[in-house]
Figure 1 (tube, rainbow, N blue to C red):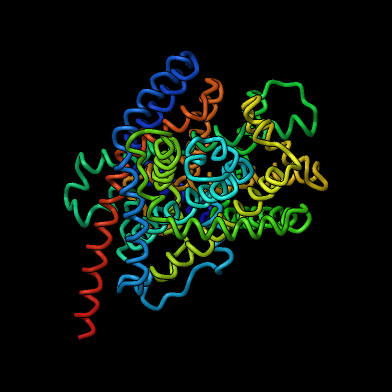
Figure 2: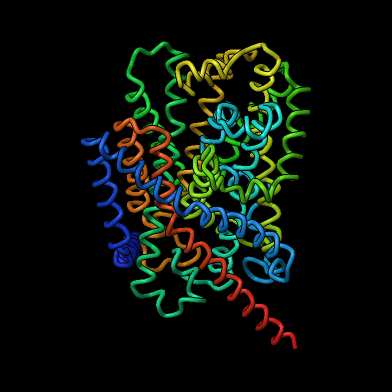
Length: 523
C-alpha cells in the first residue's frame, strides 16, 4: 500500500510540475481570439464576410508576388539541402536507426500533411479550372485542366513541409532543445531575442495560423460529407446541422486517437492509407476510364514539369483573369498556415532518418500519393466529360453546387453506394489523422518547455481538440463562401511567410555550425 501511495504522490507531483510549465499566454490568448471570431462570424456573417473579402483582396492583389517568391524559393532550397552536405545529418544520434518503418512513417506523414481536402479537390478541382477564363487563354480543357491540380498540390506544398520538418527535426533530435515552438527554430539567428517579445509574437502568429488553417480545411470539405450522408440516407435535415454532427464525430475520433499517443495515431493513419489507396485502385481498374486516366495523367504530369517555372512565377500583371490571385497565391498561403503543425509532426516522427531521407522520402510518399489521387479521381470524371458521357461542367455552372456535382460523379461509378460509404469513411479518417497531429503540436505549444520524449498533459490535449473544432463550426453557421474561407488563410499566411524564411535560414546556419564542430572532433 505504501508503494502504491508513493506512486500516486509522485504522479500528483508530476501533474503539478506540468501545470506549472504551461504557457498560459500562448494557451489563453488564441482561445480568446477564436471565441471572439466565432461570435463575430455567428452574429454578423454578412459583415464579416465583406471584411474578409476586402482584406483578402489587399493581401492577394498587392503582395501576391511575395507568396510566389517564397513558394518557389523554399522548393529550390529543399532540393539544395537534400543534395548538399546537410543531407547527411542524422535527425538524432549519428548512428541512430529510424524509429518507424518506411510504410508507417510515410503513412503518418502523408495523412498529417493532407486532410480530407485531397478527396474533395481530387474529384472537383479540374472543373473549377476548366471554368476559369485563364484555361481558355492557355488552350484547351484537355491540355490544362488536369495540370493545375498537380501543380498546386505537389512539389511546392510539400517543399514547405519538408524544409521546416528537417529544421524542426534537427532542433528536437540533434540540438535537443526543449521548447517545441516556432520561435525556438529561429534561435540560431534571433539568439536571446527568442525569449523576448519577438519570440512571443512569432509563437502567437503560429498558433493563430494553425487555427486559421484548421478552420479553412474543415469548412471546405465537410459539406461534401454532409451531402453524401443526405444522398445515402435521404436525410431531410439542414446541411449545416449534418456538418456540425460530422465535425463532432470527427473531433471525438481524433481526440480518442490522440489520447492514445503515437500508437493510436499510427494505427489510424494505416487504416486511412488502406482505404485511400483501395478507393483509387477500384476507380482506376473498374471505373471504365483506365486508358484515359493513365494517358491524360502522364501528359498532365509532363506539362507540369515542363512549365514548372512559368507556372510558379505567373503573376497576371494586367489582371486579365486574376488566376494566380484566385488560385496559386491562395494555395501557397494555405500551405504556409498548415506549416505550423504538419512539419513539427513530420520532424518528430523522422527521428533516426537523415535529412536527405526525410526530404526525398517525403517527396516520394507525399507527392507521389497526392499526384496519384488527382490523376485517378480527377481524370476519371474528366474522361467522362471529354468523351461526352456526362456534362459535369454544365451541372456546376447551372447550380454552383460542387458537393452535389461530386456526388453525381460518384453515381457514375460501379457500386456507387459502396463507393460513397468508402469516400465518407476515408474523409473522416483523413480528418482524424490530420487533426490528432495538429492537436498534439498545439498542445506542445502550451508549454514553456517540454522534453523531447515528454507528452503534454491529457487535459491540455483535450482542450486543443475541442478548440480546433470551434472556428470551423462558426464558419459553417456564417455560411462563408469558399472565397471568404480562402481569405482566412491568405491573411494568416502573410506574417508566417517571413517566419518560414527565418526558420530556413536558421537551420542552414545551425546545421553548418554542427557539421563544422563534427569535423573538428574528427580532426
